[in-house]
Length: 69
Image (tube, rainbow, N blue to C red):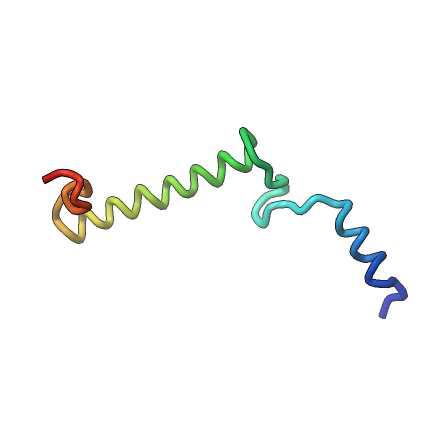
């Protein structure tokens, strides 16, 4: 058991920035390496989802979504 009060622990945690779970990068908005990595991962998931929809339905994604008659 430690002798630190909750206030001391909280102030120590607030001074160090939280890093990503997979890298040492600090999450930030704008043109950062972290944001670009996350955007790329979402794009890969979206692309795979479109390919899976086309394989299962046997039709193009645009026709399946009703965007092209």
